[in-house]
Length: 189
Image (cartoon, rainbow, N blue to C red; front, side):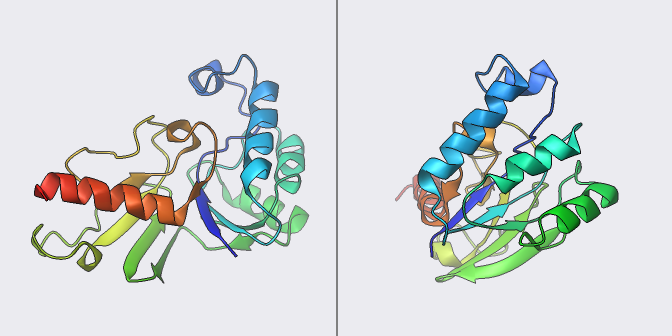
């Protein structure tokens, strides 16, 4: 099983300010592209941790989009995942695993804090000249920025929004590699 992370699919979000910067002319085009790109890399036995904001506006169509996605989906709730929407997702897609509003876990030697909102977690009391794995990595969404890092000087807050990854989920090992490379660059190694 491979682990991927993504955020902010915003299925059925009809506002041009969302789908146009992603390179689409309509919400329907965006929905289909996200599903196609997701399914092109995610296999049925892969796990995708979705960091929130699954859908907006048309919940029925949004659920149909979610049902077309490959893999096991674990969901962390975002600001558009209201209590009513959470219950709807759980009733219509019982295979989606709820992780609440944040989740902490270890991947190899790395401690990772998953959340929709960016969160300072990097253990800044640990000096930058210490080992990379002594820090806690926050993988988040919400911002819709196109950059992988929310701050070029902080290699421990990684943006998993679809906007920063051409509407593809990102493999967790690629995220850790990006963060480590940024850490080494900042440290001057």
